[in-house]
Image (cartoon, rainbow, N blue to C red; front, top):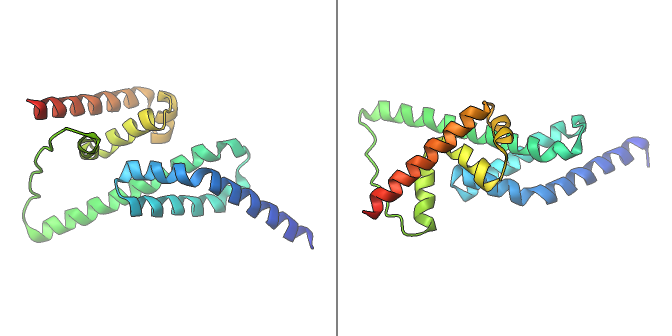
Length: 171
């Protein structure tokens, strides 16, 4: 076996191990960000495909999780951006505004999940990264490409919105 074949085998073996170690968490993160199981699987797979192309350039293998998380966030942002353009185009074509959604009744986790999905994307991303992924404010800021104070503000506004919606429904 040639030197290139041995190197390729090691590369594939390390990448395969990273895939097995991280695919479940990557899919869960994508699901929390998108709210769609199939889309989450697609986003997680695409993130690994993109990471595979950059894997050889990765100096610190321990940083793989952070790069993967960042790739998932970027892919999710791209998805939402594309959907926003599509919706805008369709609204223009229809010539009518989107109907106002009714506030759901908060009685279970499913209800809270729906409220979370109604938050603006950046606020939802910040809450998911801070409380689900258990990232520090600095790590969340790095992942979202913003300042720590912006993360604090996003989380504060999101939590206040959730509290207000929950109190409004309970009355």
